Length: 603
Image (cartoon, rainbow, N blue to C red; front, side, top):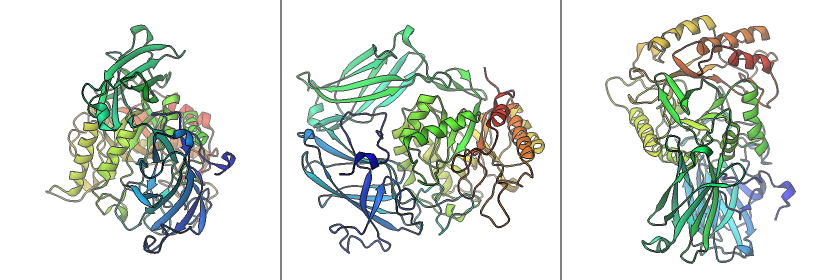
């Protein structure tokens, strides 16, 4: 077993469903590439692999110790672990927070699970395969063929990165871990706040032996809500019947503290599955934020108050870890950097972010929009990687929504990005996909607004939010283009008059991508460096452009917010507020003043 001093990302990976007992499996694993995807036939399942990798970093990353950015059609991992003897009598779950893209898992030679989807977690039950006190030899094969149509976000399908497409990510890229559970256990809770009633609605899936949940079986679920000082302020008990349990946790009127950007207070919630004899079968800890999201005319309100959303596009890439943050502190630091620049939230762009990022957003009062990395699944305007269609991404998106449902920091969903179509006079596969993603999201979450597609093609008439992307670099023409929003005539992304979008009919509206001002004064002709528009000739010209573009939207009564591109440089795309290494590029006091000291619409 590795020394704990060299194991990366040791923090608990699932902060909304915490159990006391668990074992982190990050660190050194055996590793081998399998370019022809013939590894099973060649015996990779049963023999040692040829190299070592540091999990949870992908083999393309420097932090993995591999740093191979070539096409990796399939990769294999192997590790033998000793399951703690103290877990005797309990089943063991093997968790993968994310494996890109098609994963198959064997333990002690037996296939225990598989999963398609590179951004969402899955678990394998090791009952009957590996027990407490025994060794478990874990083997993982991850297939990730760059020519396949699958959700990959900003990962390039070409050999090298270019434009706004970056280095591929293959295999394990988030934490791997074990936890023990009893014969019956509680699934991930769904926490729904209701301010008007002063309650948390707690919904808990019931997993494991179904005999334990028979009607009249005497098994129950007990939940308590705690205040800041640890005192219990609400509790409820319900029989454990069927497949799930719902509890209303009523908070006293004088103990209801709302979650808001200014006061991101979180209530701790303890949940127990209690047997007939009164013994606790399972226990988890979660939390909730008492807040609401509503629409009132052009405004999106938090707890009944209009909050102008000064969002930044955050793509969540790192120089050394690629999609994986080098540390938990790095996740928190990105939020702090954004706040210091004057933003109060982010559009989490073309990536399902790590759960730990959302946990820090919850604690720091940071407003975020969850988005699916749909690129390489549907048609889009500029890149051939959009010209395919995949049916697998609806299921993976719903896995992401279910995973992240309870985070109070998430104030909206965006299932698709920059979709478009040239089809005239007929329903296309893209329209089918947009409707499926939108209505599936609405069915799973009735508490948040849903934007059917960010930028370009709005195909769902009932979309809760309407938006556009606009990278005009002239503040005056940019202001003129958006002047009609307050009168109900906003700018719409239609190319040469083509009807990409259903008509606008009064929804809240924002420019969800703008700016992207190119700033790297050290770049020379021929360097891999770009941003939107012509690079400013001086830093003063940058400030004038940034201030003018922000002011055009902050002063606009038809806007509920905006999203500036982007938080950091990412490889060759050098239009960030910070460098790719998170270094300072600008005077943050001036960047912050341009956003906060203007006439933002807040009540």
